Each structure stands twice: as structure tokens, then as C-alpha cells.
Length: 82
Image 1 (cartoon, rainbow, N blue to C red):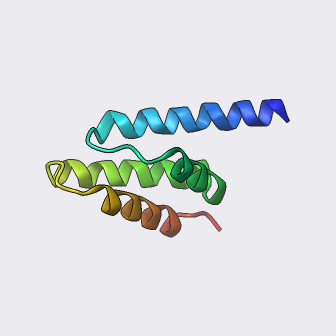
Image 2 (spheres, helix red, strand yellow):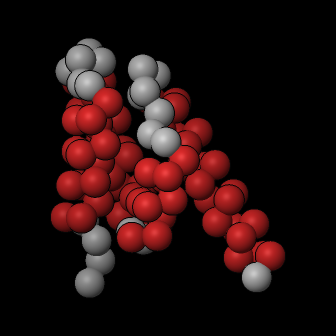
């Protein structure tokens, strides 16, 4: 149990660092990260964060917080492995 919790926490911290490395104006809440990690595979979430970051950078940081979360969620949903 502890190792699962420790791995979950480490994985979440890695995804947060990746997000914050590219998207500097907003970081999702702890609850949002927990939701994403419980609903999506690591691969799907990784692709979603990378695509969201690319879109954010292409828009010169002009995406608001709600849109960032919705876009990332949408990409994760579309890229979920069967």
C-alpha cells in the first residue's frame, strides 16, 4: 500500500514539474491532478500535457486556466489506450 501511494505521489510530482516547466501562468489544483491520474494512463496524461503545453506556447500564453484544464482533459480522453 505504501509503495503504491509513494509511486502515485512521485508520478504526480513529475507530471506537475513537467506542466510547470512549460505552462507558467497556471497550475491545476491537487484535486485535478488526482482526478487525471485516477482516470488516465500515464502515457495518455503525458501526451495530454505535452499537447496542452504546445498549444499554450503557440498561443503565447493567452489560454485561461479553465481552458487549459478542459483542453488537457479532452486530449487525455481522446488519447486513452483501449
